[in-house]
Length: 235
Image (cartoon, rainbow, N blue to C red; front, side, top):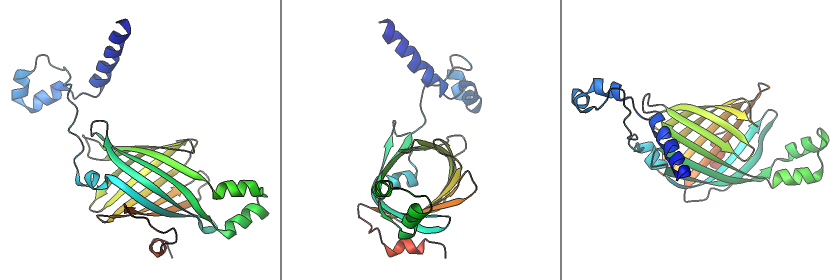
């Protein structure tokens, strides 16, 4: 019973820490002020679940194809993957899980690994067969309307993001930590109901720039060599 009581206290404290200030709400509504039992008491009611058009549209399963540029190496790597998006935690957060693998490592980059970095063939092979995953949680700040997000990936990197949407475009600025470093800006464009185009530019800790580009199709595969990806590549 002692353990149960402690758990209930923890739960109540957690709920209270996220509650809206009763005094502020009472000032905005005289009727609520009359019904208030005690000024400053928290309202133990969560915000309404996310119900914006963007979140509803994004929910589902997507097949992805991506490529990346790093200084000196255009399209040094390509990959494919799957993205699953759902509303979780009582509908308060959009949960996005991405899983993928590398499908192509450019010959120029392989030669760079061999000749300049003297990488063993076994390490190059592991890189060519590498898999990756990430988990992203995002919501909308009920006070400001801005997007607030956190991302965790299989390289033990963490990122905190702040962003906004305008029309069919979403822009999130990320700050990376733990095993990661630097910042990035991700631009997501809703091309149509079943197609997403994403560009993310990373400013690494040494000041260099890496750019990832991806296309996502709802419930349909996108060939790794899709010509559409070339359209997203700066000329």
